[in-house]
Length: 233
Image (tube, rainbow, N blue to C red; front, top):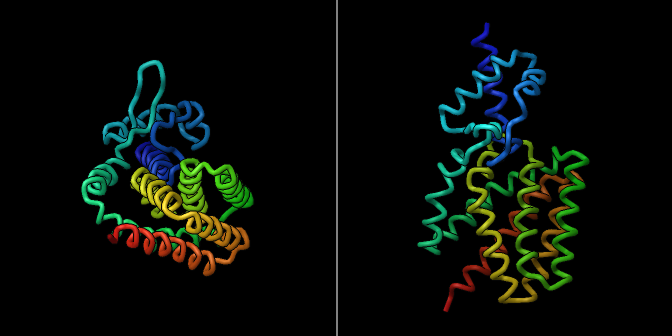
């Protein structure tokens, strides 16, 4: 029975690692808090944490607590980041991947987003619009990337969230680079990107799943087409 309780706590913590509830660098709640949350003893929590630490997913810092490592993320993202840096042609593959993955996250976000998450999405859109109004292209690209992350969180699908968390650094960097490049290259493209994000956010917040998916995929196809154009002599 004690073994089953340890496994239960481990599964709960693993789910939080996968879905981003416990992001890289986050400090775990105190043993007492976790024990109360899961209805188990502190010894059970301690054993579950020790097992996850043995797998490299958590790390204990003397006097500071237990923290989430980057084991999950670096296992996927790290080599890809270097490959993308060394081989720009792979960016087309990233956009193809984003077309599929983010189209699905937008679809499910429209179906599952809570009122709080819809408010967060619209807040991110407002920041994106303000950066556009200020003419701050670097900030605009950063808010662009954060908006995509917020939409992924609102999808409430553990595997999608895991993929986003695993390759998040690479995708965020790519979104920022692509967005900044387009905005520097063409002011009309910058306005188009903002209009696409407005359509996307409206569809999600209105619960129109198919329209949200199509809006996200149209947005990424636009970026992909312009990226190809930019690469053409």
